[in-house]
Structure formats: structure tokens, C-alpha cells
Amino acid sequence: MSQPRVPQIFAGKRRDARAARAKALATREGAANWLYEELQRDVLERLDFMRFEPARALVTGHAAEGLAAQLQARVADVATPTSPDEEQPIVGAPYDLIVSHARLDTVNDLPGALLHLRNALAPGGLAIAQFPGAGSLSALRQVMLAADGERPAARLHPQIDDRAAAALMQRAGFAKQVVDTHRMTVRYRSFDRLITDLREQALTSVLVSPAPYVGKAGLARAKAALEAMKDQEGKVAETFQILTLTGWR
Image (cartoon, rainbow, N blue to C red):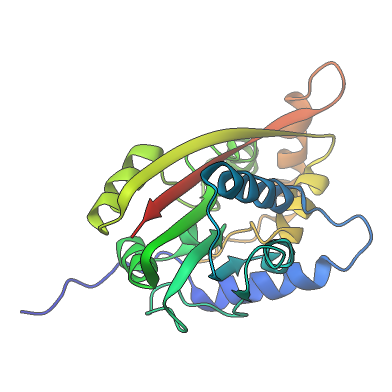
């Protein structure tokens, strides 16, 4: 009996191109990196709290080098693959620690990716995966609906909530799995700054079917919608609901 085909929601080539563009943009002065700074801080705090001292670690995702550099003070061997494919067995296993930053929300076979992640851990190894989950980018979603008018297009990724993530962790065979969320709120004065932040941090769309071009009229509607949402200080609050999956082998 043939295995059911995994729906192709995300395009691997678009994801690689997004990562390459974000890496190039990160060299500019003042480039946004606040999301990954928060993810890195959170991972280090978790390791300190658990008093976990891995010998070999793997870190994937945009700006992985930043966390890898901080881990090198406590881990003898830290790997940062340039183009990881989470839907294939992980090269170089086993690892005592695997950290995935903002990657697993854009894989087509998430159950399979989590299974590969668990299989790449050494006995007693720890996996931490973080990405924006359900409830993220609510302001942008409203703005783009206004931009598209009567013909809304799929421009934002489908998002995973904590209950679904917990079920998937259990299905993959992780021990002592924990899924938790915390909210980041970032305030913007302009639509352009919001989009720039997303581009600089590899958070733009990688859907397999690109949405139609917005056009000048759609862009004007988007900016007008964001303008209408501003508070008394002239800013719009955007939400990033960070989902953190933690599990042991």
C-alpha cells in the first residue's frame, strides 16, 4: 500500500531564497534581529534553568550563528548547517541538543520533521523548536485583507497552535514534552517598516503558490488600513505569538 502524499503547502526553494535574502539584509546597519535575540535569550535561560550541559549541539534557522557562538562557551561541538532539510534524516547525529529557530512552521511534513529531530538526539538528548504560532501577525492579516478587497488571497502562512504542537510532539515519541507560548508585541508607525522587519528576519511568505501582486491600489488600501488602526501615539501593535516545543529522548 502506498503512503499518503504529504500536501505541499510550502516551497523549499522559496524558503532557501528567503533565508539568503535575510542573511544579506542582516549586514545593513540597524537591520532587525529582535525576534532571534529573544529566541536566543530564551534558549539559554532554559538550558541554565535545567542545568543541561550538552557535549554536541546542532542549531538551525536564521541567525543560528549568534546562538552557536554563545553556546560554544558551554558546548564542545556546535554545528550550524547552512541549508538544512527538516524533512530528511538529520546529518551528523546523534546530538545532545538540537535547537530549531523559526523553521518548523514552514515544513510540509511536520510530523516527519519532528520524528527526524527526535531520532537525531542521543539518549537523554534535548530538542527545542521555536516559531511564530497561532495568533501571530493579526494586524498584518487585517491589513492584507483590506488590500485585497473583494478577492482575498492566501498571503500569510497557516499557523500551529499549542494543542496541535503538543499532540505532534507526543506522536513523534518525545519524552517529557512541553509546549508553551509567550507573546511579543512590536509597535510600528508604518506598513513599510513592518514588512522590512519581516524580510530582514526571514519571516515572509514561502507558500508554494505565491499570492498575486498587490499593486499600487492594493498597497494604498493596506497603508490606509494600517493608518486607521493606529493608537494615540501613531503606532500599531503587532503580535508575535512564539511557540516553544521542548522534548527529550
